[in-house]
Structure formats: structure tokens, C-alpha cells
Image (cartoon, rainbow, N blue to C red; front, side, top):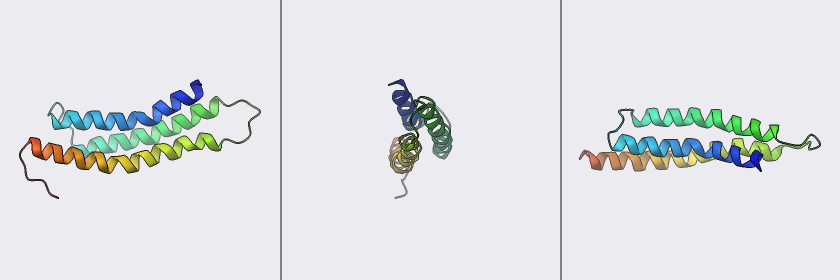
Amino acid sequence: MFVFIIPLILTFFPLIFQIKLSGMRIKDKIKLPLYAITLISLALVIILSFSAFAISMWGLPSDIKCAVGCTGFLGFGFLQFFITTPVIAIISYLRYASAHKTKAIV
């Protein structure tokens, strides 16, 4: 069970990180630009997806020869990033623009 839970948590961490930091940026608690938050999240996706893959491979019994399920963590991490990042970026930008009374470019 440990071999499945930890990699799953690792694949969701960059998404949670990006949402939390974008919210902090909107409230002006940090001065990090939104594109920097996205780049940091991308780096975390790459590192943590490969880590989730390695952890899930490490936990496999020695008699199992096929590890296609383990590679699913790589695909899931990257798919999750490329689907959710534009949505988070657009929502964050619109919230930031409305909070600071600037005209949003749409």
C-alpha cells in the first residue's frame, strides 16, 4: 500500500504547490511572478514524477517482470500538469487583475 500512496501524493504535490503559491501571489503575500511559480511547478513535476516512478519500482516484488503501471505515474504527472496549469494560470491572472483593479487582457 505504501508503494501506491506515496507516489500518488508526490504526483499531486506540484498542483497543490502551484495553487497555494498563486493564491499567495494574488493576496500580495509573496512577490514571485506567476510565470516563475509555473516554472517551479514544472520543475517539481519533472522531479517528483520520476521520484514517484522510482518509488513504485522499488516497491515491486522481484517476481513481477512488467512495470507498465509504474510508468503511469510519469504519464499522470505530466498530463496533470499540462491540463491544470493553463486553467490555474488563467484563473490566477483574472483574480489578480480584479484584485488590483487592472484591466485584464482577454
